[in-house]
Length: 388
Image (cartoon, rainbow, N blue to C red; front, side):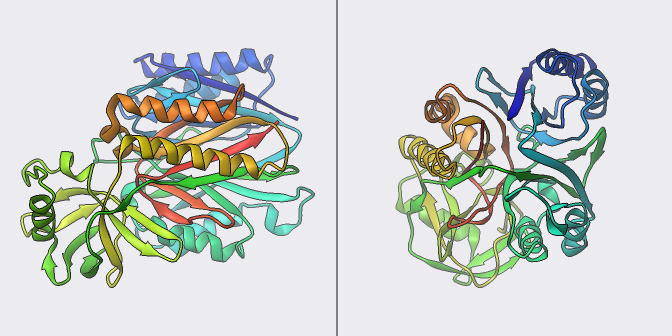
């Protein structure tokens, strides 16, 4: 059996917000400490103050999370808030892990994380999963997921996202206990006697001819088909009769992202900024030599994609009823959809019925799931459904 407490607060005082979240969890569990607690906190907060009072109030055995860019539960959606989920479970065994130094050594950070996992050393549970949250601005999240997959022999299904900072795009952090850590990733190992369901979908389609990435370095994209990327986007805007102001490019970028061709579909990358040399900074790395398209999507197809992700996840429960879902979607999706983002959350709730959900808007989404679109994504819905 798995018991949960899903909580949310819009209190602006960080210490009071943490105490309020912790008090509600403590009441739900009748003063018994949670086995694990996951928290998502807006950048308006003093993270350490909130985490300290939250931890002191409900005393979780494990606590981790990340800064975020929009927080939500079944009952509430807001920016500048905090949401959390606490677990007590006889079916799931939880272990927390931290990997530092992502910028310099993804393999080393992945090794730190995997060294804490219990599932590689024999366990009674049948299924292996891990929630992974990473400092988005450390970059190279695709490489981190690849390293984690190799070190675990592909035996874990992974889900999660990149930390946010309320769309300021300045600094992001992960949380390990009450510690606030940059340039790092945290993971929550979940060894379960029942299958969890992971769904991954986006609804973007190619809106340009295929192009080759001829110059890129990490998050920086310089040219496509040996043409400066700024010129490529200006031409696309003119051809499709869209307004594109290089001095204020975000409104255009939200509706025109980059799709990297893979064997399983298109992996999305959102441009964030234009530099004086005409190059772009993207929310995740775009590899040199990749084939890409400029992509577009509509609000109705985006909502439909969320529904498909939910149905895929629910089918994996093998007949068990859903208890709760962890849901992650891109801050760019929320900004693009505006008030229509609520329709995405309604689609999640419709699929869950009476079960609840919690999550946040992230700077990239993580998924490595059997038979699904794997890696690090932008503008992609990722959900993990946990059964009763």
